[in-house]
Amino acid sequence: MTDFGDILKNVGEFGLFQKCLVLMMSFISISNPFHMFGQVFMSISVPHHCNTTWILAISPNLTEEQLINLTIPKNAQGAYEKCLMYTPVDWDIESIEKYGLNNTERCQNGWVYDTSTQKSTLVTEFDLVCQRKDELDISQSIYMVGLLLGAIIFGPLGDRIGRRPVILISLLMQFSVGLGTAFVPHFYVYTALRCVVGIAMSGLLINNLVLVAEWVGSSRRAGATIITHVCFAAGQMVLAGVAYGIRNWRLLQIVGSVPVALLFFYIWVLPESPRWLLTKGKYGKAKKLLQKAASLNKQTFSEELFEQIHEEKPTTSGNMLDLFRNQKLRKISLIMSFVWFVNSLVYYGLSLNVGSFGLDIYLTQLIFGAVEIPARLGSIFLVQIFGRKFSQAGCLLLGGVVCLIVTGISKDLPIVITCLAVIGKFAIASSFSICYIYAAELFPTIVRQSGVGLCSMAARVAGITSPLISLLEKYHPAIPMAIFGSGPVIGGLLCFLLPETRNKELADHTMQDDIIQSRANGIPSDYLINGKECVEELDKKSQKSTRL
Image (cartoon, rainbow, N blue to C red):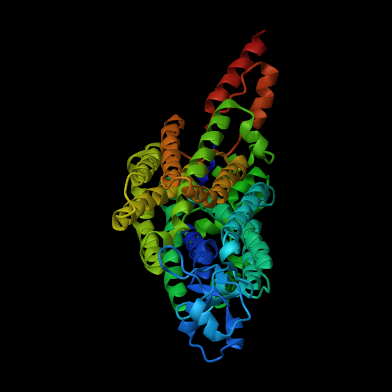
């Protein structure tokens, strides 16, 4: 039986054709951080206090310092309150200065912001301070809900209509809705559009991974996948620089969205996955693509090998329910979903709190993006030397242990905490790259999109949960980091239950048809990754039935 891996070796596992594909996917990866983490810089909080210009009607010649001193109370630390003001009175200015004001209330006429460093942010434009401060975290969680919806929608849809159409649809959504977000009049409209951008982002993340994995041979698949992750890290560094130079949130949103329009030539050049085409029985289209790849790779296309693939029965589309119909695939699905969950939980827990480590937010973002590059590149060598399973487990355990160590460090040592956070980000970023590779190799072609989509759904649930975990800090400062640390440790230990996929060809078929046949022949319906054992058992059972 000819495997698609043999066809791929014939046309070239990582020739010019695949390099061009990885380059195209890398352009998408560079632009993604603008939508993923851009809100961190659009919602930077600035010094503010209640608008108390009422006193100017009594004494219009007051200086700014006098106005604040007479109308804004101080807290226990001696700083002016940000959300309280003295209740307005009808006294003359001499009485106010002599006796002072005592009764306080919440801000009634808005706030006054210090725009010396930030010209316009979501906070200053929509007054997201005091009782509305939590709306920023809610908005970020709703964006993560969009990522979850995108995984639910575009995961199975990619298995139904193909990887290429979903990528193109997602690019169109990301550009049009992302650009429209820069012109919203209300924060709630902004939040709704961000959710739609999240849906598009999820479609790109999932299908980017799958398309590259299905075009590149097993020996170069890990490197090709991680190249796109390195570009994502580079995009984070670019984001830090662009956000540093652009202190207006609307302009920053436009600058982050417009470059996507330059990628619409993908309509003419982006290829479909030949593996997917073959599983759908579209042999003619698959043949043309493979011939084109062979030509660009300067290889000779083998008609004989392709005809052997042609003779095989095309399979039907799988769905997420197929992931739980048998024991081995069910175990893989549950463990990988948990691995993605804890990866996402810690990754976003660290990435979305870059301003809480004591350093300048732009510098911290630059460091976090820079540390991901060696983390992503290093994972290429890790998975090839130690294999997928041990690399995945090791990075998770390292990231978890570092987070647990942070729980015992005093907040009076911010430099130590920041250094440990960078190490944790390094380990989790490397783990995230590995789990993308690992998931794409564990699931067979017919349900690969659904399998990766399920894992992505778990990751998005973690993204929604991550900001909420940070709120537990008010009960005890160590609780968030304890959760961020214990999850990866558990996930790392569970990885030892998974099979190794290093230097193995991708499985092209689910065992759905074999399960149906096995039920008729009395064979247990356990899923086998390569399918050989099941086929051999079916043959033996068939021969026994013939003799009887």
